[in-house]
Image 1 (cartoon, rainbow, N blue to C red):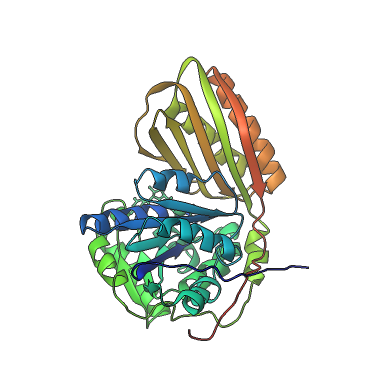
Image 2: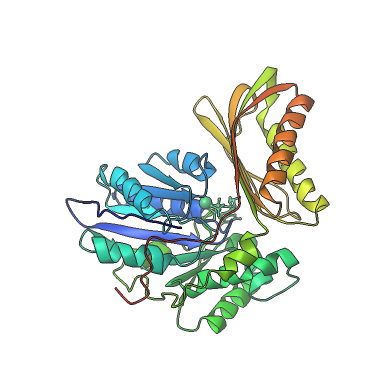
Length: 380
Ligand SMILES: Nc1nc2c(ncn2[C@@H]2O[C@H](COP(=O)(O)OP(=O)(O)OP(=O)(O)O)[C@@H](O)[C@H]2O)c(=O)[nH]1
Ligand SMILES: [Mg+2]
């Protein structure tokens, strides 16, 4: 039996707060874009609050956005729609800091955000929020695989239904990472998006470099129709196909050098071990991200597929004595096996670099079929 109890939480704000949802598939660049948008809004003198979301605690995203220096709350344990009460609690905590704008990133494995999150919020809290058009971010690599169907792996095919439903419910399609594309490639992908979604606005940005962020900000700061593309049917079969092949792991690990170790080398070796494990099983990486924290500084690294190299960001930590690793892995390995492989990799790499590693928490989960508190598919 699945039971949800909803007690309307009185949320109050001195003035209406703009609410912006930034959705999209794994690794599309949502957190990076949220940061770029937030920083741009701060420049305009607005106060910004952020809400992150994941299936489990120990989130790299939450740790990362905390570094932006803005109020942050996280919802873990399921998507916003399934954890609607937690979303309200998180929103309340951020609203206490009196933001002008609230930006929220729904967990990437979910579609149906309009019917299960935006519409219920409009229904219950329509007077305190100004709703922005719903942006769905897109990684060009996934568009080639899942829209243009150029060399899609079998694994990518199994996620295509979720990916397409995410595009379907967007008000604005935001093609991200255009810094990695030529002008011709960008145009080709924009044309493909326009052909499949003729009535939608298509924007191009590079969240990393800043291209197009002003234009995107202007669009989402408008009172244009928000959540206007609700998915009519609650067809969650896509989750059974894609989700069944996915392992989700969040872990935190304390690392102590004997006496020092290179944080970057540790991260690089660990990511390679996980990538090799996926390759050895004929599987794929959807997104492995990690953050290594040391004395108030943090280095990040991301791996988005088995055929690319890890990308490093944040601060270069150099050799450190003691650090905290937060690891989030989403790949095509069943959760118990993924947990075992990851724990072994954490210890093996530690041994190679003469580091004492202590796993403080390691949580694996298979994202389940959504069970939202509300589903409102009529316009609100
Ligand atoms: N080249 C390039 N890389 C980007 C851009 N935006 C994000 N990335 C990179 O893409 C990777 C994933 O970025 P995130 O912002 O973590 O993506 P996400 O959609 O929040 O990922 P999940 O929360 O795991 O679904 C990171 O390595 C980012 O640095 C961009 O505009 N250009
Ligand atoms: Mg993210």
